[in-house]
Length: 94
Image 1 (cartoon, rainbow, N blue to C red):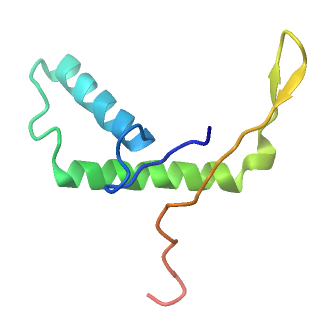
Image 2: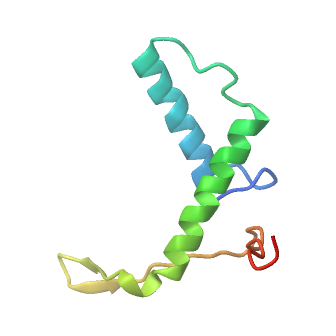
């Protein structure tokens, strides 16, 4: 199973959805009130962008990961799938 960053069109079960949930929980724990507008469009855009940036970074750095099952010395592959993410902005032409 690949890491799913999430977009507004593909939200359910994504990293972005989990970030939004964690933010709402942390907000309530620290401020002692529920997060206002917890499902706002702006918040979904923010967490989608952050999650997509994380997934792109992980994809760029796949060779930096060496995950080993300590019990068997079995190597575990990291699979990062950037399909479905928005294409990067062309920063050469602002």
